[in-house]
Image (cartoon, rainbow, N blue to C red; front, side, top):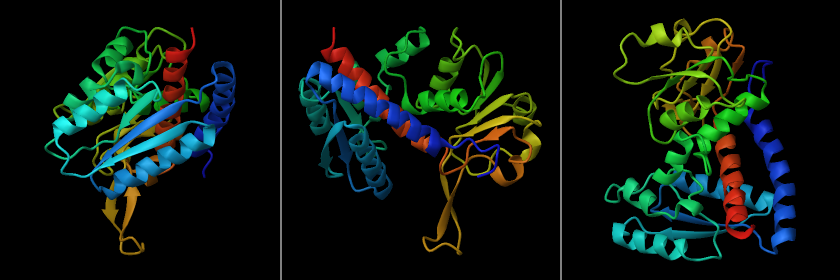
Length: 295
C-alpha cells in the first residue's frame, strides 16, 4: 500500500489484539464469556459472508456466538418474538440483527424492539440519543470505527472541518454527532451534505476530512477535494469488470485512483472502513457484557 493509505486491516488487527486481552481479563473476573446472538434472515449471499466474518472475528478475540438463521418467509411478528426471547436471555450479552432485512420486515420496528443494553450495532433510539447527548454507551459500529481510524492514523479531527456526504441513520448522522462532541477525540466542525445539497463540490472542497457514505460508485471526484484532504470512504459498490473471475470489482464512493495523489490520507476499498466496523462490533459486545455483569 502507498504511504498515505489508511490501512483498516492493520488497525483493526491491533484493536482485536487489545480486545483479546480485555476479553480474557473480563472472563477471568466474571467467570463468564461474552456471548453474541446473530440473527440472519433469508439467503442473501453478501449478508451470509458478513455474518461469517463477524463470527470469525468474535472467535479470534474469545467472544462466543450463536447464529439464528431463519428463512426469508419469516414474518415480522416471528422475528419480534425471537428478539424478545433473546432480550430476556441472560446467556446473550449482545444481539446483532444482520441488515438488510426482507422487504416485508420493517428494520426500524425490529431495532426499536431490541433491548438497548444488548444493541451492539448501536442503532436503538436510546443509544442514538445517548450519543447525541454526549454520553455514548454503544456507539454505531461504522462511525465508531471511522473515529478510531482517524485517531490511530494520526489524522485527529480536533479543530478540523469534517464534511460528511450522506445522512443515513447508520453512518452519516451518527458520525457527525460523534465527531462534533466536546472531547479530544472529536472537537470537529462538521458539515453534512446529502442528495439535496446544492453546489456539493463547493462544500467538499472545504473539507480537511471528507467522509463519503453515499452508496454510489466514484461520486466524489478529484476536482471536488483540496490538496492534503483526508478521505474516509465508507462506500462499497460492485461494478462490472470482465477481467475478474467474479465479473465485478469493489469500489468506494470516491474516485480513489485520481484522489489518492491529492490526499494526505485515504482509505482503500476494500480494506479500509469494513474491518473497523467489525472491530467495533466486538468492542460493543464486550462493553455490553461488562455493563450487564460487573458492578
